[in-house]
Image (tube, rainbow, N blue to C red; front, side):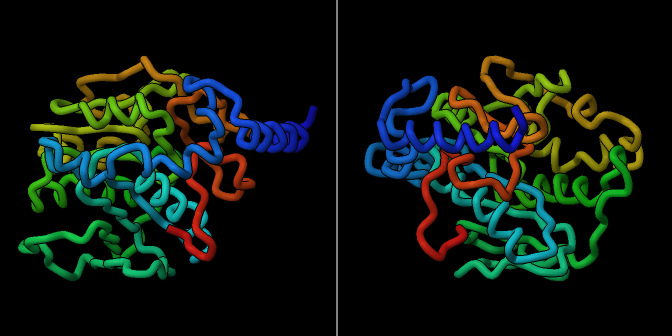
Length: 289
């Protein structure tokens, strides 16, 4: 059976599950496409969770796009997933590597590297930090643009008093409530999930708390970008924990669907039918985020 045929089959099955309300909590939550859209009625908000005696938490991803359509399809969907999840956070940061076009989302706060915001008392819920110069990616083993954005998030966190960082790349998703709870409950050290496909830590899904936040802020000293070229980044991260207890992988690289029992997923494609993203709350008409 071709990949396209498999994708068509999954679209049909996914829609049937959402309509019928069949499935278990460990696979597809009952009526996934319906229940996922009504979670806010059954669970406390992200703000309530963040206020419940938890460390001040920043969720961040890196970014680049050459069109607003791609910003909406990829980062807009990512943002919607964060906001509709059970993750406890205080602010969201997107660090942009010199994109020629920026998103035009309503109410978006855009900061640049030419500005000094270290003394800001109260952050907006979403900060989009734009570097004017694109560093990009020179090869599979040399990516100064991503590195700068990744390390910047650590400095940003320290500067604004964050005690915890959750790194979720824009093509990665924490799907199940149990893996989101793991990230919420993590309070000390540096952890990542696991990538079975390549048999190494999943760098797209990390959490840092306590002293690990400062370790990321000082990553340029301990792990200069030039020293990481031609090395596997995942093997260089100073991880305290690699958690293999959850089910997930870089499904977007080799499957036309995300398994219904996945706790997390990576390398997710931005241009698939909406039923591909079965764990997502449906977008409001005309809104990207």
